[in-house]
Amino acid sequence: MNAYVYMWIAVAVILMLIVFWFIAKSNQMSRYLVIIEESKKNVDIALTKRYDTIMEMLKVAKSYAEHEEKLFVNIVKLRRGASVAEMNDALVSQDNALRSIFAVGESYPQMLSSQQFLNLQSEIAKENDQLAASKRIVNSNISLLNQMVVTFPISIVAAIRGIKQVDFLREDDVNAKKDISGFDYSV
Image (cartoon, rainbow, N blue to C red; front, side, top):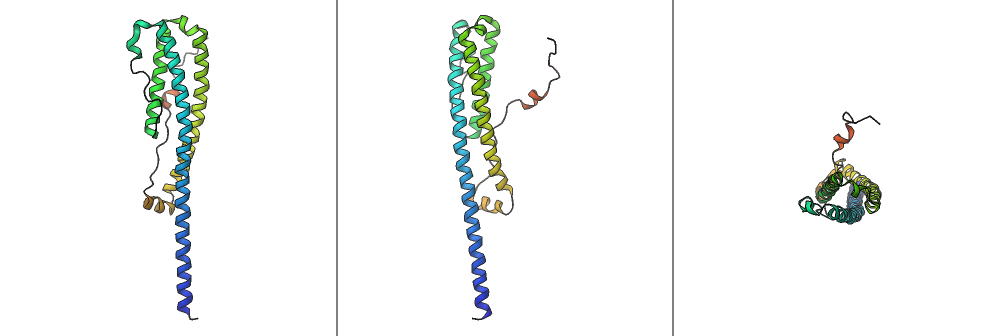
């Protein structure tokens, strides 16, 4: 065999390695997209549980404040979300609902101290923990995919496949939670 044959064999082997690498990275990104969708289902479950508990709290609040019906109209939107943006909207909506319910509680302290409401409050605390854990998992998976999308040469595979960075689930009012300047230190 002459040198040209060996050169064409080498070129063919290199091209096959590039094609196999492309397929492997493409499949890896596809798996991450599936993992992200699966982990978002855990957030859906947590949002649904939280929604149900908020609705129970809402029933308790309504029993104490029937004449304040306007506070409860459209208070809990988006029980479950399909996209990250819809999940973020659902989280904000549910947080607003809880704030409204506790605002009613300020006018009705007996509601806040009722055993049923205290049990629901405890359930919300557990669900918030589960939701936070689910959000961390989703964001971790999104981070893995986003790292691949921006890393050369894998970014070429992502561009060819049309895979773009995915938005993270966000935490509402992060800056407000960091600021303790208005904290009342009196006991």
